[in-house]
Amino acid sequence: MTSLAIIVSGGSTNNLIQVLTLLMAAVHSDVKARVLFRDESVFRLTPAAINRQELSAAYVPDAAGVAQRLAKLDLVDLHKLARDIKASGDVRYYVCSSSLAICGMKREDLIPEIDEVRGLPAFLLEDVATADKVLTF
Image 1: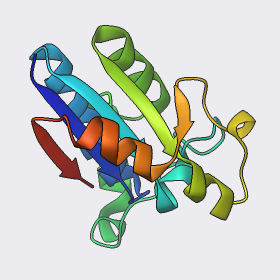
Image 2: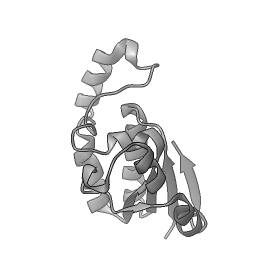
Image 3: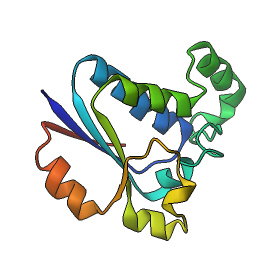
Image 4: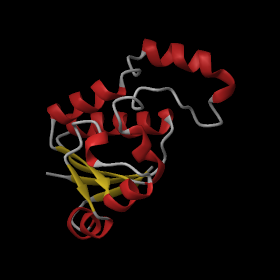
């Protein structure tokens, strides 16, 4: 089985959609994926924040149009999408322990789909080192 390690730093809605649609394609292609959320992406992993539309600067001028197109593509409920992707294949979601601490958050603040809080060294040594491909967002 091909494997993929993904490091997610950016927390904009469009960045999360890029990650999740890539994961959707991966699981439907029988690719094992391990995802480490760190930096500002951690703020988006709470039940209150995951579905909030926070676009990057390039998308802001057409925010209303983007919102309509995301709804048409069924890409509004990112929490459900993350849950469905995980249920469809070999995907594990991790949150970087130091990023969680820097964000002033605890494990209990996160969506239940997060498998584990892990240190970056463990992710690098166990998941990145054995992955066929490594991507960053």
